[in-house]
Image 1 (cartoon, one colour):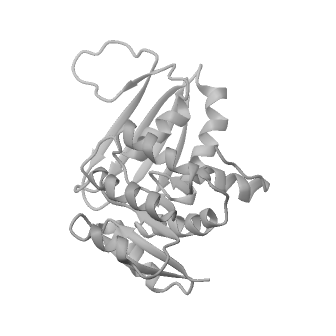
Image 2 (cartoon, rainbow, N blue to C red):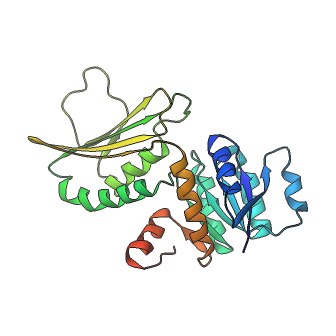
Length: 249
């Protein structure tokens, strides 16, 4: 069956998605939507099965309106959404299938899983730090991925998130440092360091190109279309692949 796709967002990720989908036998992009051509969405002749959203929070209205109208599945990777926008996206689960992730790398999904297993063992005896590096055009800091790493380390917010250290800061408190580096053309590098007495454990993921996010997003999109109505995470897809169990919340 051919999956008819509407793409929202035509930045670097959007262009890579377009190039990759052109090579797919089971997917085709019917339209690339923006604020100037949104009205054309409602005159498409083909039924749309999937909307891919890798745009900007300002486009969220376009996305939510069309998903509600068409009932198509939504896979979104747009970062910087407000809490209200995120809640609106989750509410779409009442009528369709939705997946949201700030990072569609399968390697990163597995790294998050590892952190959730490791941290309860180490958090009381080791200091924890997050370091992320991105290209010099990235506009937000810390990265969306750094934020989900922080959440994986500290889901109950027992630690202070320290984004800035400067001057005479005194001895370290119960905190997790988050460091954002910007420069060059790096597609994304994330490290979590557990720093103990006389030992250090570092878990690191490096994206060598943005294509890994495209590959993960397309794999996730095919998986999403096979699920029941609901809101899904990339981790749930990983769980099913590992253990054969399905998640839906």
